[in-house]
Length: 140
Length: 140
Length: 140
Image (cartoon, rainbow over all chains, first blue to last red; front, top):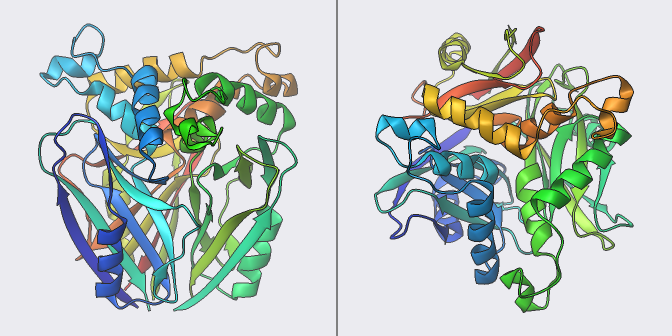
């Protein structure tokens, strides 16, 4: 069994944003030399997500409004007890749970075994600082 | 390390529906000959889910109402910017994020290592056309 | 390829609660002797979650209120059809979908390859009875 590990760093300029990281993940898969196996890609921070969906700007706009409705930003420690710690990002911990921490992708014949529209995104809910994403590939 | 890969195709007759695919996944596990390892099962389309929950019709009814409340269908491009592309399925991209893209299941002594009620479902949120699910098993 | 499997049992005293199980998962990783690979940790019951987030009491308080708002407890079979089976836990099946069934964690140099705040939690939504969590590690 072979394995390959890499931490990537991203800094998004806004509080909430989505970045297509598929080409970077494919680079790591190539570097691994693995032809058959599984690839894990996860946010290493708990106010961020890695998820698979469509690379379409309108959808990303919709996601932002929708997540804001389901888990609104509110810096007040009266609304979110987490913000009594001095943080203002309780909402980001919720948004991340809806979008998920990680994806596991099949590696088949040396490629991400994807459907026609699958793309991997880094989802940021408390940005404007560097944060890390892990890529791990295991297989043969 | 052994691996086994299969794409299954499903076409559900309604926009939203849930199908118990556990027996088909078990067939792939048997075909793999793998006794110890991990099994990945994921939707290959971004308006569908694979998830694990209860095979109970009342619960599936409840899930449909609940998902419709959290992410209502609305074909209007004024409500969802994604629908300005000519699609009407922005809501399906949201429902899929709540229910998830994939499951990873332990394979122990040649079987899915499941609790008493765990069953694998294909969740469709924009049906009435053929869509694919991937099964990948790695191990020994 | 090596593998290691363990079922852990938890009984939480309240209907909804969160328990940091990271030290127990690390024990299993050590017992496995695996240095490079993947670790799966999942709830074996369909009204419970395993998820990764922050070990902060205020956030857990916020999660409880938030989940109760998104998927309110209601024992009535008129509200949730699932409760016509004699159960009263339809809401717990929904809360679990938001928080997720499982996490997959990279194992690097014999450790959980975690960001600074990542901790693994058992999330219970229908407690007061013993329920199981699976830990599986594969690798070398």
